Image 1: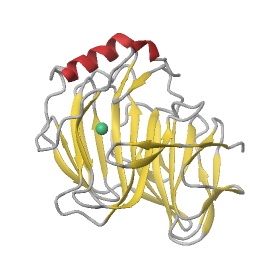
Image 2: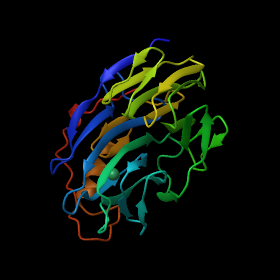
Image 3: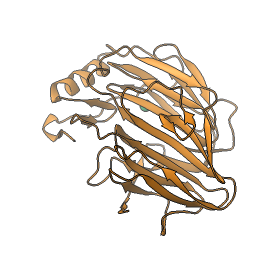
Image 4: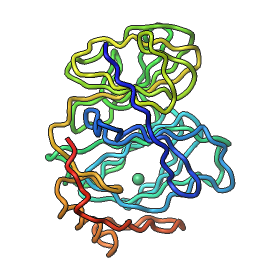
Length: 294
Ligand code: MN
């Protein structure tokens, strides 16, 4: 198996919140429909903690997954939902939604998680926005390795979350030291990220902050983990449509991008979110910098 290891880059979300940006990454914009992966923490939650004011999305699903701590989600549909480890917050933006994310007033001492985006295919990208919370996700075991499946299917476990294209999102945790053969769908490409502890694919040790790309056609992932380690596995059929990505938007043309930015600045389309956090203004957009990504 040829694994490509691509170092992520440090990104700053503001207020000194540093994250490891693992997708998009150099030479690889999407893995299946997965177009964005930030890994943050574990961090001590100081003061009021996370405070990301309302901001818009189009053309994607946000997939929120925590290993430690808690986050309060609010959106322009009126949803208000705390997410905790093992739970899934799935927000499908369709043509437009706004949301905020913050630490609850009484929050845990640490925060550790991943923020993921899934690009919506043409047939779904202009649908009505929805928000779903799942309090418990299905698990399946491979020897001492437990996989919690939050999107798609793996082994005996199938996530109840509605996906708009074929994909997999799962988190492995090692109940004891072990090496297991994890079945892969050869029609999927995959990405692996170490979230904590020690693990290896084949004889290649994994490092935190690196995206490990597993190409199409592989049928087995030989995954070794030490007790307590956590590993993220993403996959999907190669996304068939080139996309434009800028700020919080995924679309197809510069005109659509400009329209989404203009609508956010004018207070149209996205609705508004309850709460006291300030709204996040859109950055300046130079449409000549937009490049279709396949
Ligand atoms: Mn967001």
